[in-house]
Length: 326
Image (cartoon, rainbow, N blue to C red; front, side, top):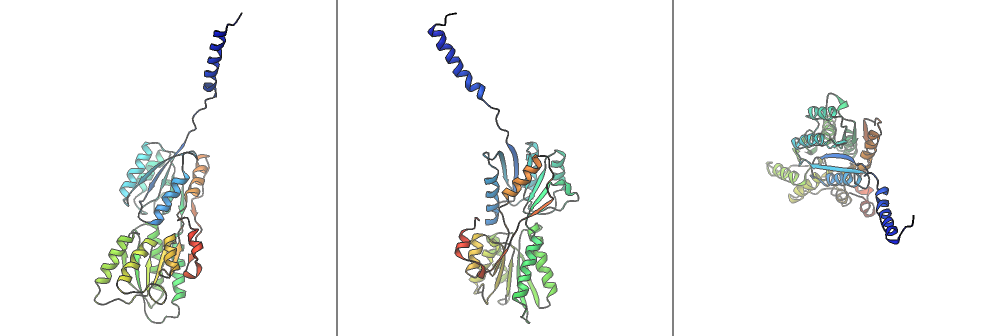
């Protein structure tokens, strides 16, 4: 059969149109991750959130559903239920406090959705309600802090007066760090806990409650230690103290803090914070490792603890601080 020019052109046109259709591939399925974050109450929390966002990207094969609970457990419970309805592949929960999670975690388990706890842990009767916990050993952190204080005040025979600024009540970080200090006070006859104030891990609230407490005393209290359960609380306490004539650091008030953010270490290098215990927020890559184990049908370890260290002014340089990611 003789093929005319018009027919030949038509066949070529059809072939060129069909080729892209034949080469089309099925869209890549994204792993859907639902993250319930406590909020943005501190520099640490902001860095923790950014670590999750930069890890679970579409380029890496994920679809991230992110919910900010604004410091309310009810908001987190509602978020988890939405994630269950949306049939996510995995739920990542940064729990506000330890208690009150049994029912909603049971719902996630019944739906076949694994839950990974990040940062803080939960107190549940059945630990199969969560697949793994990734975070810091808050008891260890507190014990390291009071061991340092024990060395700093070992030759002091007179009273050692302590003002304690606590984090969010009932959270794992608050419970672990508070327990260490309370035990140390029991173990030292000359250590006195003047007050325990709820700073809620925020600079503004710590400043407010510290001012109220100091202004409410009949005379200016003699303070040797201010034990703050995170950097932002330390910033608020330092501001309140300095406005009232206290010197922070050196032979003045020893301020102890936790987190070791870039700003916290800057305060430490300047001598205002005497000890800053590291709490690493950059857990995104480790969470992804656990997600991949679960996606492959494996069983991850129950607990993963980040490696952390202590910082004093003598340990720090500007170069080291500039290299910190958070």
